[in-house]
Amino acid sequence: MANFAELGLAEPILKALIDEGYTQPTPIQEESIPHLLKKRDLLGLAQTGTGKTAAFALPILHHILSNPKRPSPKGMRALVLAPTRELAAQIDASFSAYARYMNFRHAVIFGGVGQNRQVEAMKRGVDVLVAAPGRLLDLVSQGYIDLSTPEFVVLDEADRMLDMGFIHDIRKVIAKLPAKRQTLLFSATMPNSISELAHSLLNDPALVQVTPESSTVDRIRQAVLFVKAEQKKPALLMLVDNDKVERAVVFTLMKHEANKVADYLNDNGISAAAIHGNKSQGARERAMGGFRDGNVRVLVATDIAARGIDVDDVSHVFNYDLPNVPESYVHRIGRTARAGRDGWAISLCDAEQRAWLKDIENRIGKDVPAITDHPYHSEEARLSTQRPPVLGGGRRNTRGSSGGRRPKGNGSTKQPKKTMSHNRQRKFSR
Image (cartoon, rainbow, N blue to C red):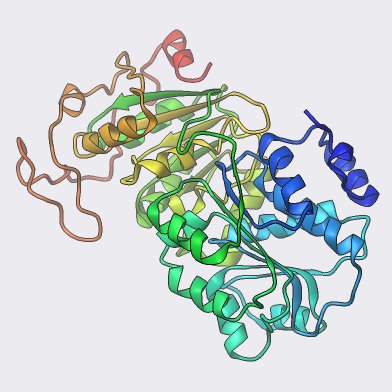
């Protein structure tokens, strides 16, 4: 494997990489950077946690160093599009870290906050602009940003942007870009929609695929617990209330459920914070800050955060709700086992979500091991043939159930908090 110096990167960038503790490039970096330094368009297929940000950031910074010029007012030399506020902020922070020994101007733009500081940052132009598509188009329409200037255009997490309905915004942005540019598209999956987008955007691109599409990280130990829906909260508490769980992300389907789960954990002595699309940007930044510095032990999130949480030492991921899209399972559990570490991914599966587990197992090509030796095990959930719930409306009538409704209640059963022996608890976290 080549080192970063052998890839031909400029000395100020190599010095910053040493400061960051980078020693060897990851596969996506080793394979992508030479193509990008040769000015080729690129389609990169790799999951989160593989080092994609550095794979495109480092050659962009090398180009800026090698070809110095003043950015155009309201313009940028490189434009990076990202699906969420959190991911945009993290990409911007990575650029800042890698460019610490450069004369470098950058800005990050997303919604949920006032636009004045963003407008001010763009007046003189920047070397790199990282932006969420919605706010970017808003400022373009107001005349504060000029999209005719970028030499590089990067679409990061392109499949996620399409999942979130950004395709029309993306096409509006693309229509305003210069024809002569180097375009990079990174995606964790390759559905037809991404293939079509890549075909329309990229010119004779290099293809870099470092892992099989939607494969799970080998170091992640996976497990599923079959439980009744109304016992998910105490079952989750049983799992989280363990010294082996150093830092965990819990995923829910619904925003209101994320709030309830975070409140339940806090009420039971586990420091937790919720993060989802209804939270203000300030609240989301405080939650992420507390999670990074250790004041928040558990981050409860919806899928909006599945690819936006870039914290290396997450020991556990818990799926309080299974995702209804199998690929989302892969992205969720990819929050653990990062930077060479091991990790646990444990899912709670009720009767209604049993069909989703089958879809996930079909997608990853293997069964998720079931752990049944715990006080909340439900054979009804394990053997369920119910249809999955319908999101965004009522629930379908299900076979073998009275209308497919979940039992009422807030999930706070009066069962003892610790009914599992110490040896049994260790199964879930060692």
